[in-house]
Image 1 (spheres, rainbow, N blue to C red):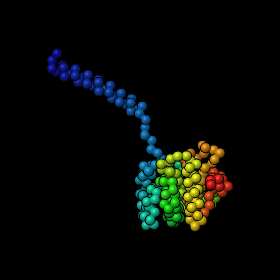
Image 2: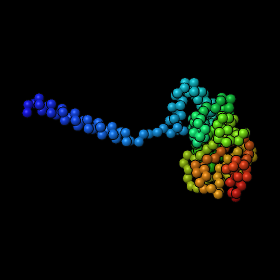
Image 3: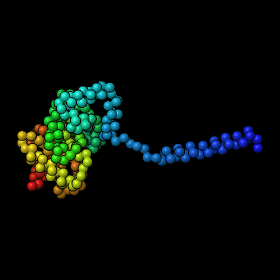
Image 4: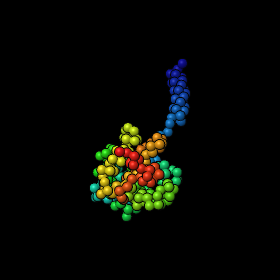
Amino acid sequence: MTIIGRIARLAFWTLIFGGVLFVVWQRDLLRAPIAILDPSSQAAFEQWLAEDTQRRVTYQQFEAFLQERGVADIVPPWQLARIDRFYAERCDLPIWRLPPRELWPNVVPALELVREYVEPTVGEVAVQSSWRTPELNVCAGGASQSRHLDFQALDLRLVEPEGELETLYRELCAMHERAGRSSRMGLGAYYDFNDEGFNRGGRFHIDAAGYRTWGRTYSSGSSPCNRFD
């Protein structure tokens, strides 16, 4: 076989082999799991922010406001724009909303309670939900006078949960009692002694709108704090 023939034959088999590899690669690519962005994650928030220039400017102003009031390092500021994912999806509403500027001062006392009482007691927390529009509040079944409507309240969970849920709520109730009436702390302790499967994520509510506590049915009588020693 001539040199030209050998080169042609080599080129032919190289082309065939390369084609087989390409088909296998494409097949494996189609079978590979596709990474889905968590719509309530920081990456999703950054994506949402990048979609609108004015939105980004407003958020930068919000961060500057928190910094000025000395509360920018308590929870990641982007979490304060997050609406509870469960309610957002159920109500077909956006997960991200920046509160109106006139409401920004209202969240400061709740953040100060997180810094002074909550995190020293139970550890680092993440914000699941803060401000609610009236539309969202109705759909979520919130109280007509919900403190979320005025950006006064935070729904929180532990960043690194450990132990039993009962232990968490026992610690929260003890913290609430130590803080006392002068703290004006509202504690939503969503724990049900008779239903171990309820609120497995350990969500709880904090506001600075008045000293009180409540539980699963949003009444003071349902608060687990009534049963802890």
